[in-house]
Length: 191
Image 1 (cartoon, helix red, strand yellow):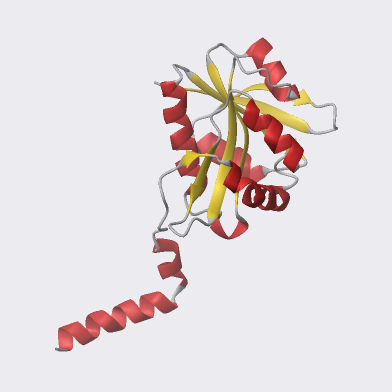
Image 2 (tube, rainbow, N blue to C red):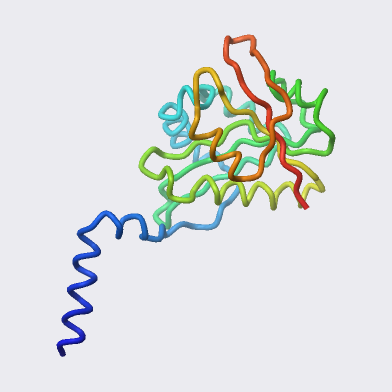
């Protein structure tokens, strides 16, 4: 009886501490392809991610969904959207400035990750890592040998720069964009 009580006490103390929150496993569904039903949640997460991601509206997300894509979503078991990724194979007729520069400078075939955004309360909990792992799987399915993306240097996004370094991305180019941002174009070889 005493052993059970002490075990319960330890759990209770751990639950009250911040350490327990860091160890909580998220109950998430596997990543899946982005669907129309996700649009309102995507737009909300997108708005909270600015200036780290370019703003979207309903017209733009509809347009991006019509292009060849590997857009993904990750949600909790209750279907609450935790994050999304917008990604395009190198043969997509996508007109994004950074994508066009990568077409000229990055060895093909590649999957271009245009946006990854995570709900603010879910950041630093492995959601972005899960999306990037799933994007690697999607890239392999499409016979792509690289992942490419960009990260803002101005306005600064040091968390994203550090994340991409940890994930094995390397700088390919630095770009001053037409809208006044400075970005680094990144690439990662995948097997």
